[in-house]
Length: 476
Image (tube, rainbow, N blue to C red; front, side, top):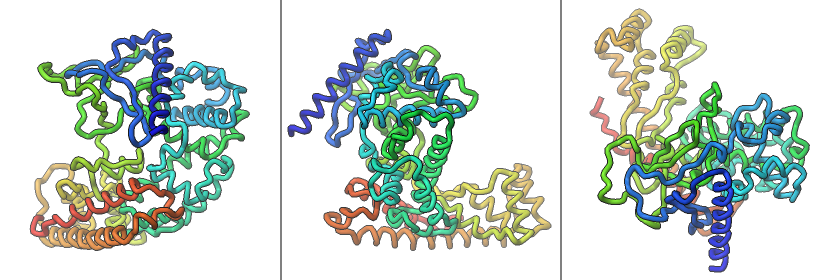
C-alpha cells in the first residue's frame, strides 16, 4: 500500500512539473482534458479529467515541446548526430541521458535541461520493458546483467544470433530458449526486432566522434533508450526526406496505451500535435460522452497483430478478436523452390519481379489463405510452356486459369501446410500446458520470469491452434 501511495505521489509531482514546463513553452494546459495516473501494474496511464465527447481536443502540444532531431540542442546534433537517422540520434541522446543519470554525472546536463521535465515522466528502468522479447533475448545472452555489459560487448550477441539462423520451419531453438514457447510467426518477428536493434547498436558503436560519456554507458542504458524511441514515438513531419525519419516524442501522448477499438486520433501540422477523442473531420454525436471521467484514454497504435504487439510493445490484446492476427508460412513455401534448379530459379526471379516473392500468410480471424499463397504455388506447379498464362492471370488479362491439375496440387499443398501447422501448434500448446507456473518460470533460461509474459505467449499459441482447427478442406 505504501509503495503504491509513493508511486502515485511521485507521478503527481512529475505531472505538475511537466505541466509547469509546458506552460513555460506557451502550452495552454488549462484546456487539457486528461492527466496521468500510476496504474496497478506500476506503469502510468492517461486518464480523463472529465467527460469527453466526440471530436474533442484532449491534449494539444506546440512544436517546441516535441522531442526529435529538430529540437534536440543543435550542438549535440552537430557533434554527435551526423550520419545518424532519427531513431539512432534519439537513441544516442537518451542512452547518454540514462547513463549520466545512473552515474549521477551532470557534465553535459545542458543537453537535457530543455526536456528534463518530460524525460522524468518516462519509464526510468529497462525493467519497465521486461515484457518485450528483445529484453528476453538480451537477458539470455548476457545472463540478466544488462547494467554491467559495456557497449563494446556486442560480439556475444552476434554469436547467439548466428547460432539461431535457420530458414526452416520449425526454427531451431539455438541459444534463445524462449523460442521454445513461441509460435513461428512470433519468433520471426522477434528476430526482426533484434536485427533492427543490433543494426542501430553497431552503428552507434562506430559513430565518430563518439560522445565522451558513451563509453560509460551500459547495455541497460542503450536498450532502455532504444525501446523508448521505438515504442513511444509518433509520426510527425520534421521535414526529413525519408518518411521513417519523421518521428517525434510527444509528452503525455506516449502515456496512452493501445486499444484496437479506440476512436482516439491525432492531428498534426507544423505548429504542433493535437489528440482528439475521435476524428474531428467526421460527423459527430455530442449527446453522450464517448470517454467518461476517470476512464483510461487509449489509442489505436495501428493495424497490428498480437505477435507484433508482443514483439514491439510487450503485450497482447486478449480482450478482442484481432483481425490482423496471421501465421507466416513463407518458410514453408520458399522451401518448395529449389534455387539449384534452373526452372525453379527462373520462377523465383519471376515472383520477385512481379512482387509475389515472400510474405506468404494465413489470416487467423477468420481463417483465410492470403491470395499470395496460391499465386506462388500456381507458378511452382505450372509447366514452363504455360507460364505466360500465369503472367496474364496476375496481370488481370484473364480471369481464371483452366489447369485443374495445377489447382488440385495447390489445394493439396495448402492442406498439407494446415495439417503440418496444426501438429506444430498442438505440440506447442501441449508444451506450454506442462509448466508449473509457480516454479518453472522462476529461472533465467527463458529470459523472463513474469506470469504475464508467459500468458501472452500462451494466448498466441492457443489462438493460432483454434484458428487452424477451423480450416475446412472442402473450401478451395
